[in-house]
Length: 261
Image (cartoon, one colour):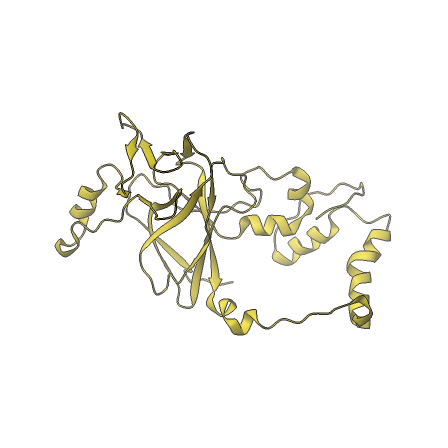
């Protein structure tokens, strides 16, 4: 178990929630059967940290221009092309050295592509040497709709800057809400060697079942065929074994047999 700090988050917008460890149940939205018996889904859901919008934001896209609204604004504000969080420029200048006055990151930036927008979380982040951050939509967590995420990998051990996400708006003429208490993105730590061509090109392909080795067939029997023929196999046995290896307390399992993840 590592004691090294893999990611350190820095808050600049005071209203921003601290990042939160991602949840194995996807904030309670996973089907009960998936949560109890499919360790693959649970593990993916818990991989990384939830990061939130720093305040509640509403967006409106008319197919050409983007408008935004925040609590206290009297009307929709045009995004031309960027906007600061209310009062944030002054707060930034009060904390930053004089040479950086006026350099506060914008909360929202309209990108050149139609209907695309960059949203700053109000945070900055550093990672330990050799670690990057995959920034993506929350894993297995149904979103509110109206936008989709662009994914990006940030070398945050070398690049100390705003933690933001790019969104493509998919709904016109209807307000799109970015809630301050619902995850906007999931940040996942990735060791940089796994991103190299050397790693990603290290693949092999078995073209047909006739090319399986005896060891391949033995593993298939042990993992798939054998358990499926065992009428006394407890539901979720594989998930229980994985949790035991990980030191995670397993949920009580039903004796009933059914398909599982």
